[in-house]
Length: 576
Image (cartoon, rainbow, N blue to C red; front, side):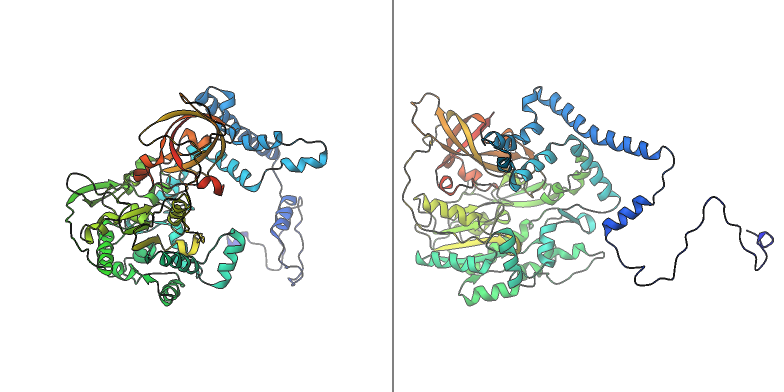
């Protein structure tokens, strides 16, 4: 407005006649008291004015959007299955429906019995999320925008500089609360229902091994942000290693208990080059070999050296953290990285573990990363292979599992012993490797290493080298991770079968089976992953011992029933 258009000094601006301005008093603590979000929302709704026709239009748009999602899902499932009773969405509710049918409701009071448990509701929710066609279409595209334009990760991935990716759990471990703080130990024990004290579990494990005359070396492997955390900084830098506040106390307590600890962190932090893969949670081959050599020096040389030849091979892999981004394939490919692995051989064949060896390695995916081909970084070039070579060709027995380093390998050992198989016979040393993140998030169960007697063979197991066809009813299944929710693209599930009938064999009462089988391959669920209690299945079985050397390392979940866990398992190829 120009000066000549302004009203004279002392005159008043004309008010619009159609609406008067509200009057406000002087601000006081009473009038400016903070209100809840619910109150703010209520006030906003009451004072919001819509243009004519806007409210019905918005309501109609909302209803169409809500209705379109199940319509699209239903149409896609019908086209994929060509059967209404096989729709994944309907099958997700089978547990809840079965619960209702299993109760004889005689009155309204009995209705509470059919209410699903929290874990059953969670299973249904995960199934619906996994099978959602709309989500499968939207997520990669939304993540593409977040990563490409906003340089943002997701709930599992942090983006660093120069294409580096970090697993959120690793960062949370490094920057989180001290894991040995009594308050956090008590809180985890009460809220999660687990045993959170790593020191207690390790001391208990050492004591049980000592009673068998077996020594123990603990190898806590640093997570990626501890060594290469500088790649999360906005500018290049070389910073000292980052660690959880309790880690020094953890080492000191173990050493005061007389437990040998081999900490790779000082060695890795002194390297001039990066020690970890750019888009993966694990270390590079050179870093892994360095630690294997230094640990071998700590253990001591073998009495009779057996040279193990090396074969170099270039591998181009896609990191597990990159896969967690769930980007479109074209954008995901830019996170691929090439490394050179050195495969350990025995001449004409790859190195293999030996159960008769006097050294037993318990390890997680850091031991598996270049040993298990399913992880995408080659085979026969992992920690066990290079430790054996660094020890002059000394044979090594291995129990390796990709996750749950706090308890998984000890649990496998415990079950082997409970079944009457003495995996500790002749052992002199156990090396227990696990990722340091387990110190803050793992379940450090106290497990019994007592040697049991072989159980009666009421569970069906084919003879070694033989495959048989069976039919049976699913009694229970182990948990299966949602594709993309775990850092490993493959997973093995466990199934407890009852009423088992073997083709071509005489029937026996109460035949049962504990069966392991693929539940996820390359982050895609198999048909077996959709099994539910009560399903009738047919499959081809073979002894687990026939395939355990190759598949024991794969991330696996177990049946919850302790008695079933001790049975001899089979390997099965499922078909519904």
